[in-house]
Image 1 (cartoon, rainbow, N blue to C red):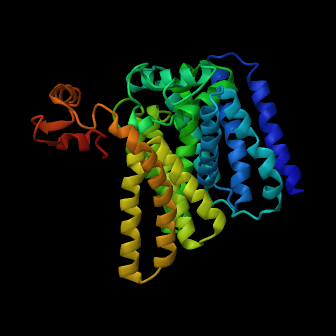
Image 2 (cartoon, rainbow, N blue to C red):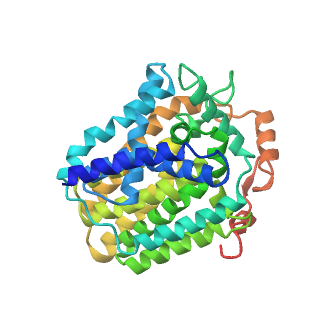
Image 3 (cartoon, one colour):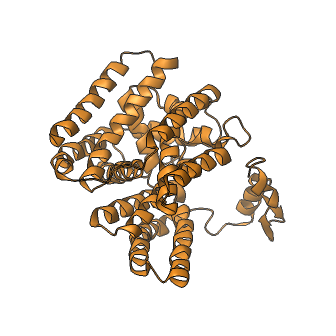
Length: 388
């Protein structure tokens, strides 16, 4: 019975996508196209997460992005097109289906439906104030187009400049690949994804924040409060939607989606150290490290502080917490070790005077002092708005 239900879930998502692709690529038609494509992309990850004992959005996100990474890596290693990555990732669904049918996953936290509905409404509001691709969005859009258009992929072929070094933060274009996959599935131009996908990711952002709050505080009410605080901090900041209007871009997605999902899975593992949870936690950490390497290092400081404080205050959770830290640290260390040679080749690794002057000019509104002695400007911390 469970096998049939999971199969119908996957089939229904495909039918929904097929119907959505009959709609126009503007307005409500575009919204439904992107919604259906996002759901279809998450289906293999959802089945894999269920096979590993989880029905949460955090687990689905970690499995989806984490399992798409090797599919994209194989396509690049073989110098094949983006289609191969999509086909390899799609194979996850039939492989995970029988295991998902036999598994007994955890039930989602109470209040999930209301949080999801709130996220959908927030997404509609974001849709109304988004639609312009500018700034860093143009850089990320360029990488997406290369992934979709080039018949022979490699890391350097999808770089931002033909003769430039790889950007160390985005050397492996994992999140660009996720967005490109949604564009291909929806049958729309990738610029539409960069401009509007944030509206579809808003419910996911609230759900993972809710799950992280429940995991940390062990309370559904405090989980909902955590989701509300998260949205208030970032969506109500200046700029008509704050940073949530750029939720589709890697830097924001890594902070608001992947890092928060990692927190939810880490505390889930501490509460009940199961093998499936550990694997999902490792996938989440690996995904975060690929999308934005520095953020996983910051997250390790936070989680490490929790383990130490928990040991000193309650003398509990040391073994599970240490294992959880290892499951975050080891994938991150692997990604960082792979990145180091790339980082050493970049202009900013050992900058000359011209590069330092250029960087100081570019980040003038972020720093105080001179180009030789500078610090972060305190005003940066309050640009998040009155609430921050």
